[in-house]
Length: 317
Image 1 (spheres, rainbow, N blue to C red):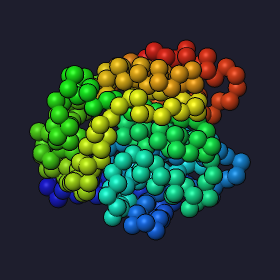
Image 2 (image 1 turned 90 degrees about the vertical axis):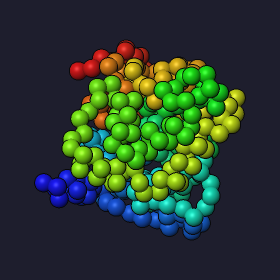
Image 3 (image 1 turned 90 degrees about the horizontal axis):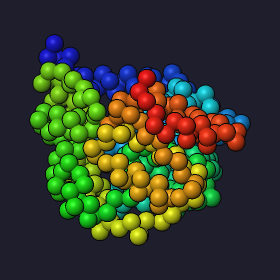
Image 4 (image 1 turned 60 degrees about the vertical axis):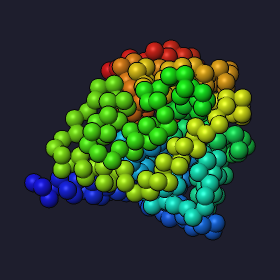
């Protein structure tokens, strides 16, 4: 039993690789030529008749772990690209830039390498910061945007004002990149509306080793870069049609940031709040998320906006 627990992370990683392959994706690694290497899951047989969609993960596990429940339903409608951001999975850089703008340029460079000119994007949490930056930096190449629980409108003052469960960036790092079973449980308490059971200690320690130890110092710097001297007045406006999805009980990025983001973007954005959900929407509410993403990105008929607005207080099924 101990051996099985010890290998749980590796077993799940192999399972997710198999799942991605079965739905029509293949693993590809691209050397961007500037000291940066990016890994991305790309379509085995991309079709020109389909629009493109990039799925951008948040902090925590690599892209497979975070998007496994979305690949199959979305690949029917899109050529899907699922990158590992820099310092996640098999992606890394020797450069010192830790900004979301650098991550955005790296993702776009991967899409360039695979011949993708224009794309839609879905970003969750940290991945939403990157997706927003892609939309700001490459407005002619980004079509529609879905931002899930993305605190891109936060300001450095918000921490001092007591908006968050943690009191400092260092405390946030200790929770978001847990190094002990106690910290992992604390992270789950904050990220989930209904905290999940994580099993025996051998399993917990293996998950920490698999998900939270590699490139920890670099990921710490990524989190620090998000908060450093951040002002809403410096955040560029984006004009792409945008769907904002938020968990009603999100404790990582509270609802105030959802409303702030909607105000900042303006009329081109719609806000959908999912009831009885926390920050980890892709794990807690994948069916609801999938429905909203497909309604917004797939439906191009004029009534789409009305459908989204009608679901603005989406309830748990």
